[in-house]
Amino acid sequence: MQSYDAKFGLPVREPERLIDGNRRGGRRNRAVNEDVKETLMRRAIELSARTMRQGKGGPFGAIVARDGEVVAEGWNRVTSTNDPTAHAEVTAIRAAAARLGRFSLAGCDLYTSCEPCPMCLAAAYWARVDHVYYANTRDDAARIGFDDSAIYGEIGKPPASQRLPLQRLLGDEAVKVFDEWVAKPDKVMY
Image 1 (cartoon, one colour):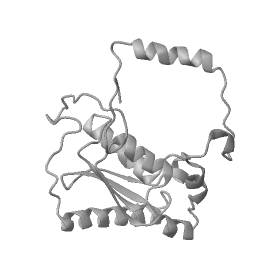
Image 2 (cartoon, helix red, strand yellow):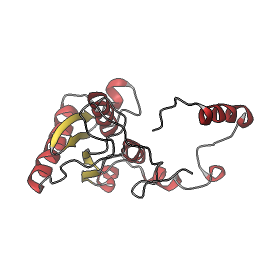
Image 3 (tube, rainbow, N blue to C red):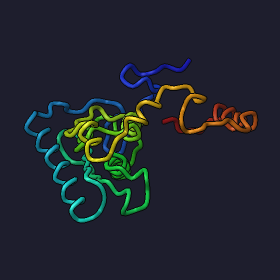
Image 4 (cartoon, helix red, strand yellow):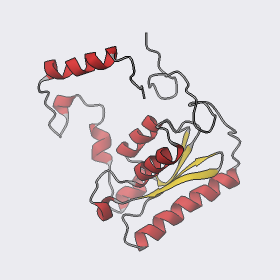
């Protein structure tokens, strides 16, 4: 029987040894003081300003940190890369996962210059960061043209009630791949 963690409601996996000797999901030194948190947030804010001024994307920056030390930085690259998923939080999460060589960022915190949009919040959950710190709010973002209220409103609605049409096709064929996954002895759960 599958168990789920209380924090995220995501499946619990057996801890695995990591490159740095820590266990995935294990707590490291979590005593990061407020001055360090504010320094990391200022760095995320400065990153958002600098990259925006350089024309690299929108006014958003993010830092992934572990024990108060920067693991990776990210900034909005939507327009500079023509990638609608290249939000600051997502690019920081991608860079941190690559640097640490693991897909779980348990033991890390995310500092972002703005409250995460639904996509970035979901990415933070999937990455299993321990905490998200943000500066600007979603209302501040909406005021300058980055309004995610329609997406927030859609989340939780049944598919037939959502504005973006969702239609299931070939479910009987696709479920066979899922059945094969369940039986796969060498799968890596995430």
